[in-house]
Amino acid sequence: MTKHENLNEKWDVQLRKGSLELVILAALKKRTLYGLEVLKLLHSFETMKITEGTLYPLLDRLKRDGLVSAVWQQEGETRPRKYYQLTQQGEQKLDIVTKRWRQSVKDVEFLIKNPGPKSIQLKGE
Image (cartoon, rainbow, N blue to C red; front, side, top):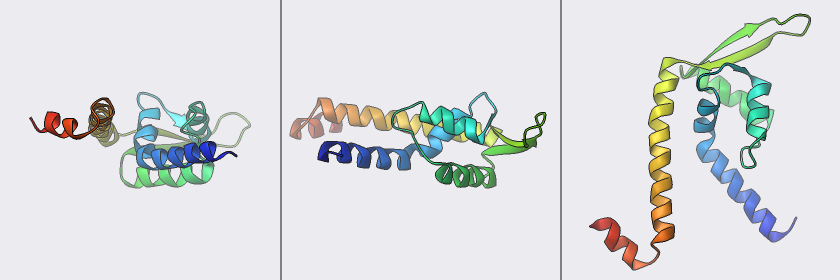
C-alpha cells in the first residue's frame, strides 16, 4: 500500500466513524432489510465498507435507542433472519441528522471555495 493509499484509507475510516449512524438510518429509509442486506448495500459504496463486527453492534444500539425495530422471520428452509426497519423516532432522527450533514457539507464546500482570510470575512457578514 502506498503512502497516498494509506492516507485515503485513514480518511475513509474517520469519515465512516462520523457518518455511520446516518448511513445505517438512510439505508433503512422506506425499506426493511436483514443485516447482510445492509452490509451488502454499504459495500456497494466505496467509502462505506464495514465489517459485520461493526454493523451488528451498531444495529443493536440503534434498536436499544428506539431508532430501529427488529423482527425475526423464518424463510423456507433457511435459518431465520433478523429484519430491521426505521421506527417513527428513527425517521425523525434521520431527518434531523440529514439536515446537519447537509449543512456540514455546505460549510466545508464554502471553505474549499473560499480559502484564506477572505472566507472568515465572507462568512461573518
